Length: 372
Image 1 (cartoon, rainbow, N blue to C red):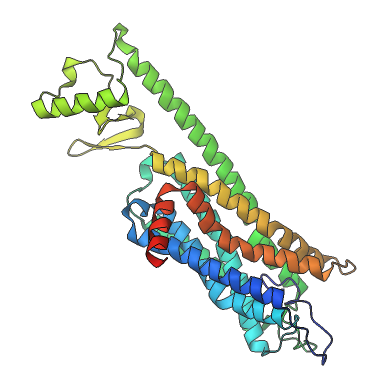
Image 2: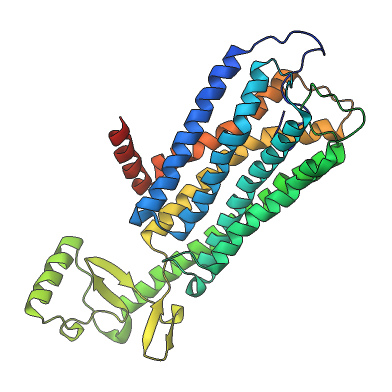
């Protein structure tokens, strides 16, 4: 099987024997390719065309979608072809090495992109004043670029001749070096995943502390000064009051003792914190806050990470076990199942975005309405 060199591509028959065509693998594989292409293409188009989706987190999601698109274009067709041929590799060894390289690189890029997202989210929560939420900045471009550079670095030994061993069987497309299998598995999965999970745990703990501080600051502001303050009115009343005040041009906080930091902004309550903002020449102030859209993104990301771990953990466990345990016999059906399960993950992310993100769901509905 491909993808970080599980050992072999498909379930090979004896050399010289006529392959048994696997039509079930062909139908499932073609369907999977179409789903991966359609779903991830919609993700890329939605972020490019919808202003509401042009957030820094979604640029990382586009990078992840590009990895899945390349997998569907460069890896899955050859893998499906080999599975249809009964697992026999009937093409050149050079093409096999290119397939192994792309498979390792794209799988690694997916994991590294998820790690980059966790780093970006951790920075957004831990040091919000230094985080640019409006557009992608140099730090985020470096993170995205680094994921692809490191992914190619992990995969490059294959294309540079690692598989060229004297006793190589040309009917099998596999990684020939067990040490490289262990190395690539550790670099691609067993190191990034714990780091990613640790960052997410720290991020949500920081977010929880931020929410508690926000509520405490609001409560103390409402009852500070030893005098009764005007409590924020309900949403509709706030909207009506704001419109009337704007029409009369009489909006003055002095008429009603709103707490310091309380602002009416299009009917939405915003609380600014003195310790989370700074002043610079010109007396302008920058407010550090985590808006509702970012909270939604933070809720979606753990689902994406959970789906990835569910799909790829069985493969990597089987994958590294075969390399370390020479006497272990793993049924070919198990190898096939865990490999297909890993590839299915590439089709899941667009579904997750559709379920958990309103903006993505609206765009997908609009796009499907146009094409259907």
